[in-house]
Length: 272
Image 1 (tube, one colour):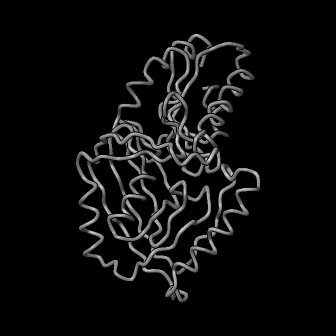
Image 2 (cartoon, one colour):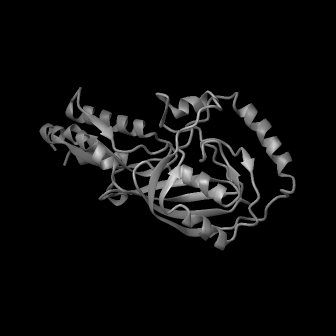
Image 3 (tube, helix red, strand yellow):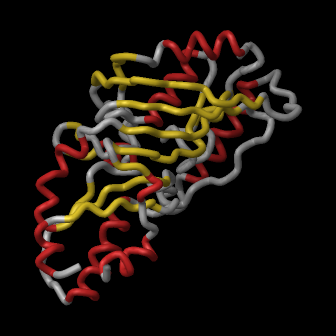
């Protein structure tokens, strides 16, 4: 690839690693291009943020291809992942520890199917407070990190074309949860102590209690859909709680993760 070909515009599909932000991923590719071509200034960006704990397809646009970002972002997206039932976290995924436990013995395959159907078609969704959506001109995560209880992103309409539950695991033998109020009080004390430590963003909590049930899913959706919010709302629909424990973006428009490069493969791609 020549400099002229690069600046004329290319889209590089990347398989984003876990615990990398989309911004870090773009910066890594920017540094690779600078080192390989000796360029100091050029346009580069990505077509749709992936959360740090998510993996999968991130489209990085270089040169004139940055003009295609808005069009690429509008493309349909496919995700697979896992939701944990019977508990919640403040950010709806594993970036922060569990803050509440909920009953889940009543969750049956029939109830799961009834709840799932509520999330197909055009639905109203409130983005997570730990997200980049704006509230009064500021990013929502800024309010979240300041622990501002008055901040609330506005609900918006998103389209879910498909939402399939591909597996359900009931969980192992559970501990005595007869007094959830006492357990949640202990969690509140623990989280208060954790809040005094450095911020937990990009420092994920890896432990998932093995007694909690989990479901795997496949979702095909339109622009602006937050899968973390679907997990949160799925918990509410089940009269329990839920959070996202893993997420992988499989496709964006006509691009698939099977076409994607790892970050280590980018330099070889540029020399073709």
